[in-house]
Length: 135
Image (cartoon, rainbow, N blue to C red):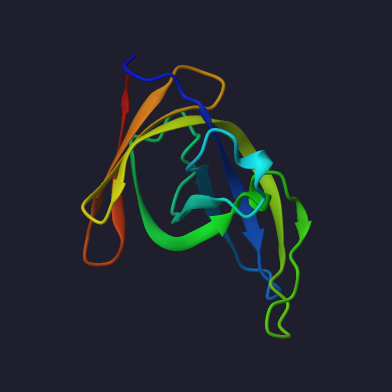
């Protein structure tokens, strides 16, 4: 493998106050985000669980960078602008290596406890499309 996964990543179930929910997939841009809880995370709202070993492709929406705090936080989210933002629960945690992250492509190798897999994302008109392949 060209690069060993070295950056923490998580999949969170984000439940909103109206009881709807979605999946948030965060990957640290730095191998040591714990030294700076405000360090940015590469952030996506995923249509399927990226850690699911049966998933070969999925769509996602790009989110603004989030703080490294979300790599370890579970439970209620702090209100923002006076509104309840719901709560998050960690579904999976792993390690990843970001090979590329720019407006034209996102490529990373992640390991969730099994064999590492490569996630290759390309932009679409409505978000991103990720292909998942063995490394």
